[in-house]
Image (cartoon, one colour):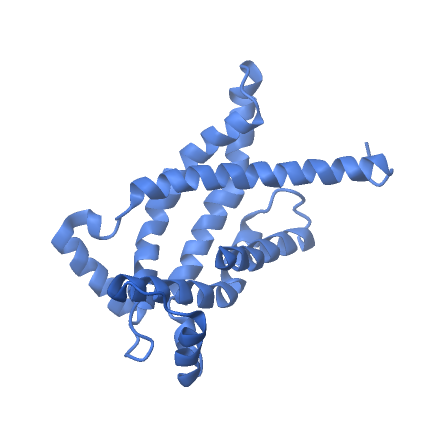
Length: 224
């Protein structure tokens, strides 16, 4: 849970920071999403690597591997193993930002204009519909990238690292053996997770925006 929080701070912080300096307002665009996916990767990847190492260790032994032990093993290799899988992560973050953070709000506005204004559907309902449309595309694009991350980050820190090309070869072998399931495992639960998380994130974002606007209006800091 703590790791999830630390992963979100760099990504959304850089996204909103670039969006602010570019004057994009409350709707971040393509450049902000691209910058966030690249510049947040060095901060996020070590946390994802630690998470994958703990999952792999638990799957093998049934015991929890302490974070300190993972960091000590990485320190012996000058912390380089913590950055395994950075390239797939950049692609994953880019797709996530473009589809989830940039695309979903635009789609929601379109649905609100075409459907919501003609029916009784409110902001939350149209947001849920937009998330349901975007999520399958998002999961389809990011699942292979997540698979590459898993292959690269679950190998032993003390052992030889697996590069991007080697991971791609392993995924192709997996796909030839199991079909498309080799690259697109877990899509069902991934789509359900994406719909819920995207909807809740944007509802929380808009709630905070409205709260800050009301606060500033009450003090004459926001133009009517």
